[in-house]
Amino acid sequence: MVYNFSEKSSIITTYLAEIRDVSIQKDAMRFRFNMERIAEIMGYELSKNMKYVSKEVTTPLGVAVEQVLEEQPVLITILRAGLAMHQGLVRTFDRAESAFVSAYRKHTTPEDFEIYVEYLAAPSLDNRIWVISDPMLASGNSMVAVLNALKSQGNPKRIVIASAIATPEAIRLVQQHSPSNTEIWVGSIDKELTAQSYIVPGLGDAGDLAFGVKV
Image (cartoon, rainbow, N blue to C red; front, side, top):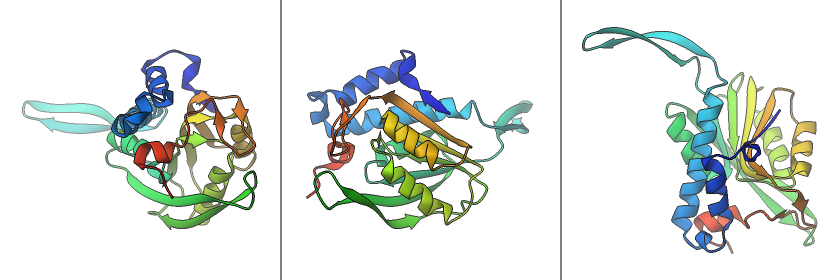
């Protein structure tokens, strides 16, 4: 299942315009803030598709019955680019536990690379809802590598992947290598992927724009 927020105009499409804009990208704080806002709205929309239970809440004047989440998801982010989106999801699911994964490309040529997962810190993942944030779902190889690493820690009840921008190639690859209970939530789907696995028009390197150019 793929949810594409650009299929209908909303405030998310305004935030997408800003994170793509080369003049606005010069403001790293605003870039991060827009990523956070995109993820926060995605989290809100996701919350509509989760299970709830009734809870009695004591107020100063009586007892109210409200619907609360049956269970909290585990919020998983891919370092370092995913940190801004992670912060937005944490604001929505403020009682959720978090997991962090380091995945990076190791190039053998400008076009060829392998994905290495070197760090994984996570709570119990078995039979939990996984919400994985990564701003750019370009080739899909990093996400597949991360999913394989996470599966060594347990089997998910449900997987939700949250990205600002994705490509059709990445979506197909992730769907081929993930269980049927996987959903992909994206702000926009861009058609072109370069030989170096960069999205066009995309927005550039999300990690560099958010946290500074790496060397």
